[in-house]
Length: 93
Picture 1: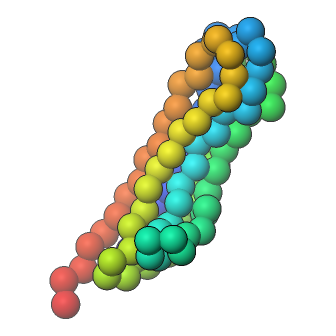
Picture 2: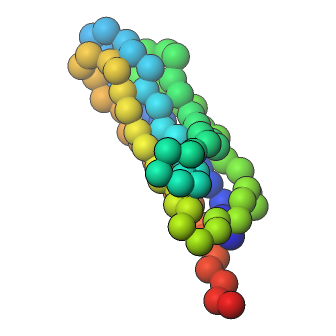
């Protein structure tokens, strides 16, 4: 059971050419079957710009499913701080 998902991005230094940095979670139900379930993305290029998203008690992972966090930044130069976190409880049958 996924109890909490968080995604956050903070612009640490301005980019030369700003892109769109993203932090997001993907729920994989199979090799090619997936859903993007939570994401944060920045549209600004100022130091300190921030976006965050979080959700609680979001889903139950079944056998063979997985949850993966991803980050990406299409900007040239500059830096971003990314934060992805989760809390999962596993049950035995």
